[in-house]
Length: 330
Image (cartoon, rainbow, N blue to C red; front, side, top):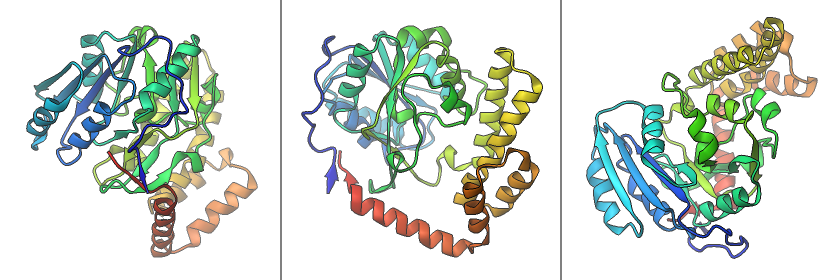
């Protein structure tokens, strides 16, 4: 089964018409994937107003492959190739150089299905209080095979997203389209190592998050994803959350209670990548933030399972996901 080959007919065209979304592709060392990423933008049933690709000092063949791919772009496009400044600086540059009422970016290894922009613009046009639209995502491997889907496990929220974000559950970047009016007031923190979580926290005070349960985008899972670094991700989530809560007037005891609960629950993420030592450390150092008994029992059981068995189970889950969802074909 191949996904993304034909647009669906279940999404109504937005009243604002085409040409209201600025799309930025921040590129960095993804020469193998970037042409497919760009083709997924070209094939949108709701055409962007413009496409800006910013190559952030790639050391591989990305700029040449981008230049070649952009010859087939059916709407206004531009490539900017410059020395490395980091992802958040690249996104702020893309925001300042674009003009659409809505703004979206797509990592140079990720993908959109054809109806992605149509669905997000429709949602934002119909919900004026929403600062962004987002949804579920597929996880695909280097060959485009679906190995997971957030629809199977993510507890996303529609409307007020503050409680969800406090649990460090956040939209995946390939699923998001922003309303420029709200985004331009805040922008990305260029000192942050994770680009979006702090921004989501601040945007949650500005308006609603419009959630669409359909998976219309794909996040590429490969060896060089920053998201595999669970220690860095947890540190960045906690830092951003603490800064946000202090700014909002939360007390030290309340912040520590919440963050201890998060550190304890995130032990499962360390188990998922096979870091049992990190998982044990988080569990025992933060036992005061213990999860429900059923969750605790599941975590303890997983600690007893040999790593090779966990890897085999993971491979089995991925095979089942591929059998269920197929391959993203762009």
